[in-house]
Image (spheres, each protein chain N blue to C red):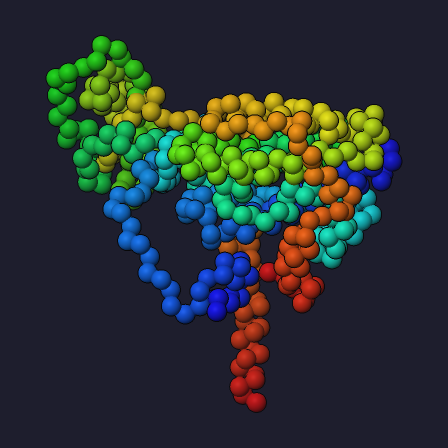
Length: 212
Length: 251
């Protein structure tokens, strides 16, 4: 006997009905590594952290992030960075500035070549890290020092992410049209399905039936 | 311009998109990993959305409304290529079909966005960006898996060999081919095919996959003229199940 389901796709799998054979135990750490996605909601706006994806590499991470994080909201651009490549400062309390608490020492070892780094600030706990700017430095620490000098003045900053620009995959200018139709896809929003009227009507009918 | 020629073009475009969209949607909940499940399902929705846009143009030319056209025709009234109706098989086959189909679809959209028939040009221009993502998705997977393990490469190669005769069937000439080209409505299947070959070769060259000798392949034609494999009618029956129970159902 094979399993019969209301979903014909399940029935077609010809799965055995009744006893289900036990699954092989999964090896530990069988997950892909994680990548972090940053979306740009409109032209000129800063890229903002939107969430992680599991993927085998950054190209695939881009594909996944595009569908998961830009399928419902307006979006004109997407950045992807491997989680491992993001350096994170300690957290300050709300209203504080983490740069004031950091004692940034001269790095013991620095590479000869200065290169650009992207700086992301978290202004308040519970909000998302937002791109604050780009600095040029020879190490993560120096980048943080530069960020403090150039970008750290204004207001509370509870946490900072630093990532080398070369480790950020940025969507191409030419590919902006991948997102032009997103605002029209109302069928992806729960709110597009006007079901409450039908549910209320159904409940009324049921009530009348039981009352009779 | 002969309206019949434009209708024929619209039907083949819309039917391909509807049937492939339905096939791809069969992966929803069954994808190899969650993220890919979401991506594949999302592209399936796009495809069905594209078919709706083209069926709407047909309605403006006097054909029945999109639901009637999509849900009440029999297999022999569909103009899709046989490639899109084949069962999903395993993921390797679905990916290869996606790769072969969307690399042709983007060329059609690029061409149609320049069409002298303005309603088609508008729709194609608007939706082109979505197809661009579909191509990026397909090419990225083929490049990644086509250079990965022996099993992945073998599976993709055998799916490629299996799908190619059907893929070549996509480029079957319509009886209005010359007319559409002369009027600047559509660049024609031969031109699409030539460009398609270049683009898929360029991707395959970055992998361990080999392009079979095309000369030795007999294309699976006739889909454009309503002849289909035994797989299409069951798909249509399943797709129209709710509609047939209650044509006024809304959700």
